[in-house]
Length: 158
Image (cartoon, rainbow, N blue to C red; front, side):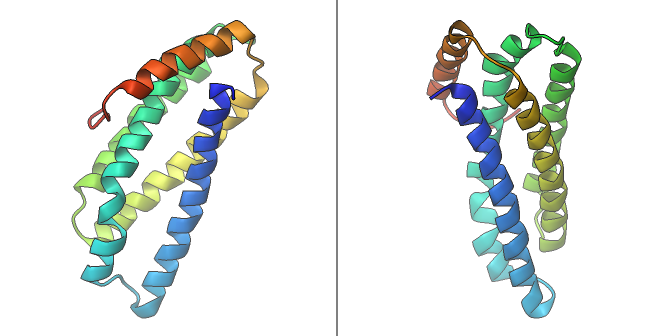
């Protein structure tokens, strides 16, 4: 499978996770209007670290494996790629805000803001990635760089 397809599958998982989080939040909040401390600890906190490392690793793979190839593809994608890298930094900051939030209200607000921006970002990337045709040599290069990145330990800071 072309590695770009794998990156696009991650975008699909973000869309699905966003819908799941929205559904779960409505379900949990709908009971009494707010999460209990136990629900917050059981639902929100346990998944922060895994989500963080996965998202930051995904960003690094795009930035180091895919974006250099995209920048050389017609039409000139340099500005678009630059904007995507800037969005990665912005999303990493939103991730830090979510990670730093300790109570239900700030956590859910941060999570909502993060996913709102993340879904928008992923749709922009997915649209761009789908428009570009990659040569076999480019696909091999993307795969080779991504394979090296996949061997790195989890990225815990950005």
